[in-house]
Image (cartoon, rainbow, N blue to C red):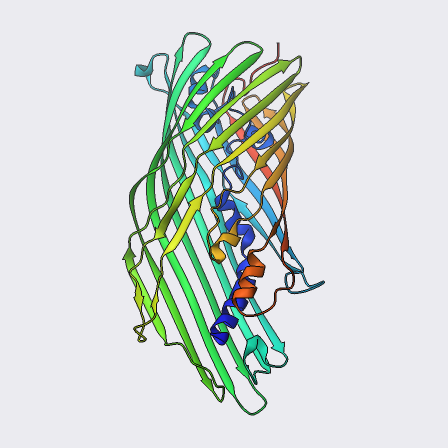
Length: 465
């Protein structure tokens, strides 16, 4: 249907503008949890050396000399995406955003009955983004979007995408001798997700013809699931190794809703108009799944310098229904619409390398690099565009004391990536319009400023000999 496909084309162009927000949801290493963790790219699976053990390796918590209360309180992120020649030669599509993200609050729990074992709590923001974009376009020409006589077409499109996911964990860790520690952190994950896509188009012809089309699709959900991270850490004076396993998640409860609306009217054009649809389904079943992962890592002391490295492999999560709706039956009994929202993840492996150097007087500097590969499963719809690139991160920062029992972190993390994809061209072809090129080139850039504090006694990291 030409007019309906024209609306899909305009919607697809605007969906591309929401890429920076949605991409984060298909990258497992885009966030770090802890001040040093940000600067070391998460390469802390061997000996985290501080309270961030609750996330990176629970087994190492029992070997930390004196865990500190840690607050990664201010994380400021700037993101920019460019679709090269997205609207034709020399006409790039681009968008940018700036946000402030809470990251981690963690601290020890001191109970006399624990003996040599240790416990700690953690609250972290695993995902957090909120994007609201709008765009209005006016097209002039002849037989626009393949409709004879259509000479003008205006379109107003609004895209909203919001995801917030919070984890709460309680860590138990036990030393087995003076060098080996084992531990477990069960996490309860609470997820809120919402997306809305609205396209309103109006067109006309030289002879007074008129065309109006509205398309809207939205959904929202709340979901609670349970997962756990297990870890073992073996530490010597100048080196350490660690192993972690993160279990697949188990859904506990959830509910969602999905809406679908389509209205097209015309006068003077020789078109077959699709039937009007207005459907809202509440209390729809929802689910969200996260994968099994296995990580190994370690660190080695070389004088005043500590070298950290880690690798983590994430298993596949087969396609599942994020929101499970009933089929939408239109007034035209021959047409049945599917309102289900799908999700899924491919297997990926990420690696990180970090360097920590002691300048003396309790001042330390950091430099790291890590990969952040896309895990979004390719699906035959526009949703597969929302995470279609791999990211590479580089971070640096300084950790310094400001009082006897307080230390602060200031640092930055830069991420960039690019990808060539044919999905945008495929959508243009499906709409009946010639694509601007066979493939589209995507470029993404992120800059993160990290400000954090560690409070309490004891040393925060492994001390060089």
